[in-house]
Image 1 (cartoon, rainbow, N blue to C red):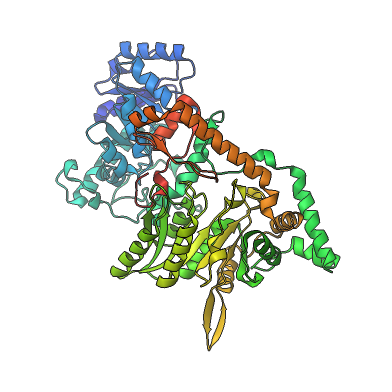
Image 2 (image 1 turned 180 degrees about the vertical axis):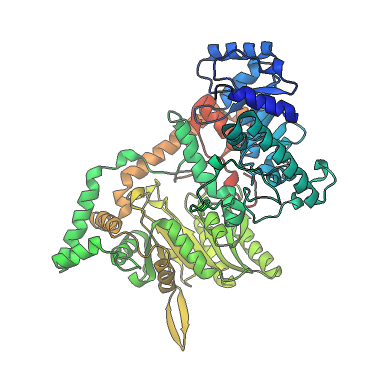
Length: 633
C-alpha cells in the first residue's frame, strides 16, 4: 500500500502512541509535522557514511524525536559509536540481548535498546536501570504479552507484526482496531494481576509455563477472514526456553558458539581463542593411508574380506573395535597397563565425561568437584545431567591438594557425598598449569583415603615439549583414577574419537563382579550406540603406524607448539616489560606446554571487551568468566 506508513501514523496518533517510520524509502519526511505523537526514524545499515550523514541531517531538520538502529552481522558497535557521535537525536539500539550489550550500548551513548529475548529481559533491564530505556520487541501479540514484558522489567513494548496484519486487512481502520484491541486486552490482563498500576508490576505477575503467544484472557483482536488459517491446519506449537531444561539458559553452554560467532564475524582477526591443532600438520592423504593400514592389520590377523567389510561399514560393538590397539599404545607410551576390557571407545572425550558422570552421580546429595578455572565441557555436561558442581579454586601455581581435601571435608560436613574430582594435571585448559610429581602423589593418597574417584583428563601431554610427568593413572595403585583420553590433538579432531579407562571393580550382585567400563557401555548404547567404525579405523591406523608411540609421532608438533608458546611469552615481555605491567596491574603465567596461557588484566575481560578487541585491534581471545563455575575470571 503506497499510503501504508501514513495510515499507520494516523492510527498511532489517534491512539496516542509513538510510531517508528523507515528511513529507507528515500521520500521527503513529513511525518513529524503531521503527528501529535513522538515519531522515530529507523536507520538501516550504514554502508555509505556520507549518505548516512545526509539522512541524519534531514531527520533533525524534519523534527524527528529519535532514531532506531538494528545490530546484525553486517553492522557492529563501531556503527553505533559513529551514529551516536553524529547526531543529537536520542538513539535506540535494537538487537541487544545480553547485559554486556546493554553496558556497551550505554558506553556508545545510546539512550535505550530493544531486545527480543524475554528470558534475558530481567537481566537486561537490571543492567539498564537508571541509565537507559529498555524496550521489548519480540512476539507481542496479546495484552498479556505486554504485561509479561513490563513485569520482566521493560519500560515499553514495540509492536510489529500485529500492526502489519491490521494494515493489510483494513488499512488505517485495521491498524486502529488492532491497537484498540491490544489496549483493551492490556487493561483486562492488568486487572488479573492485582497490581494497582504498571509501577507495581513484579516478576511474580508472570505464570511460567504458558507460551508467550497464547491468547491471554477473554477477548482478542478480531481477525479478517483473509488472515485466518485454514481450519484443517493446526498452528505450530511455540516453545519457550523457560519450558526447556534449565541448563539451556546457562552461559557456559553458549561459550563455544559465541567464540565461533566472533570468529565468523571477524574472519581476518588473529585468533588466540580455540584450543585446536595447527592445520599445517595434517595431510589429506593420511586419512586413506591410516585406513588402509588398519584394514591390512585386520587381514594379517586372519579376518576375511567379509569380516573386514563388516568391521568398516557396520555399527560394530558399543565398547569399540580398537580397544586392544589403544590398550597397547597406553602400555608402551604412557605406562598405563590395563586390560582392553577396561576401555570404552567414545565419540570424543566429551562423551566419555557424560558417560562417567551419569554412572557415578546417583542422587541430589552427590557432588562433582572440579578445579577452577575449569574446562567448560565438564561443567556443561554436569548441568545437563542436573549434577551439583563444587569448584576448588586453583592457586597461582595450580591446584592445591590441601584445598581439595578441605573441599571434600566441607561437603561431607554439609551432608553431601563428593563422588569424583575432575582435574587436568598437564597444561590445564584454560589455566595452563601443571601438577608437579609430589602433588600427583598427594592427590592419589587423598582420593584413596576418602573414597573419591579422580577423573583425569589430559589431552595436551603428547603435543607439549620437554619431559612428561607420569599420568595419574600410571601411578594409580588403588584404582582411584578414571582416565579420559582423546585423539583430537594427537591424530586429528575431525575423527572425534576418544576413550575412557574405567578399570574400577563393580559388584554386580550374587557375589559377581564386573568393571565400571561395562556399566559405561550400557549407557553408551542408549546415547550414541557406537563410535563410528570409519573414525576408529583411521585412529587405529595412526597408532599402528607409530607402533603405539603417539609421543614420537607428535614430536614435530610438540616442538612447534613449544616454540609458539615461547614466542608469545617473549612478545609479552617485550611489549609489557616488568615495570609497565606492574604499573598497569597485568600479569600472566608461564606454562611449560599445552595450548593455553592465562593473562590477568585490570578491567573486565568479558564478551563486550572481546568484541572490541576483535573490532578495533583484529585480535580474538577467550574470556575466562565461563570457566569459573561460581563466577569470577
